[in-house]
Image (cartoon, rainbow, N blue to C red):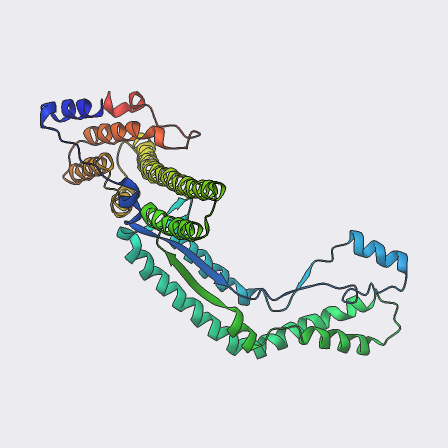
Length: 371
């Protein structure tokens, strides 16, 4: 029995323990939001055509072959270096969200405890994205000249593959004119570049149930008004039961998702603790001391894990306190032996939560300075 195990663990009489009923689904859902990050822009890519490559050969069989088997790829309408900054900002934005969230059946769940830090960093990245967009809009005229110059140089090479029914100059001018109208202008950049997010709360099962029951009551009242026969009444009862079944299914499904979220949170936090301590222990084994980088990693682990431990998992908090104490002992000049054994004990306890099976936890018996 759970109660008996807890009583034994805390050294209290079983009779002193009282059961407190907690709606875990409600508790979890109220502790965070789902965040979807939307970052978009025109990619300045256009599909290559046969005309672009001088393959506009007037042969029906050849044209069918080209259509069925050849993918000519795309052409870039702006120097690649001008777009790299947007890829980097987007990558940092998504990385920032991943660091402050958990993956759930609903999407990325950001705990209330982590929301402020995520938002602060996200706002800075949004500002940077908008500023870079403004710079790109201003640079478009010069970038257009640059890209047309590059394609002008390439046009002579493409001309060699044509049937040469046009002069090189005519082919080049038509080629560049067709290209120029495809290059996005400032207005298109303004319209297609965006950095935004949607924030959702997860409706509680009781709210869903209430809405469905309202629909059920309304439906039944309408049916009662028109009911004239036993068959109609049976039909009404059948539909009522259908609504009740739907409510039960939705609540059951949501509870399963809540359970999945709790398992995911627990696994991720425990896995992070294990991985960080495992790396620190490998370093200690090599140098018989704790490196500055390992200390920094463990302090970062403590800060982030506390922020993300929105369910107040006591086992996780207990492990963090032990790591903090071990680092304080190390800072005070205490034996690295005691610190190592503490860290190894925590890592061993949390080992099953990690999916990292390639790089195993070092055997404490292999630490020469502990012998």
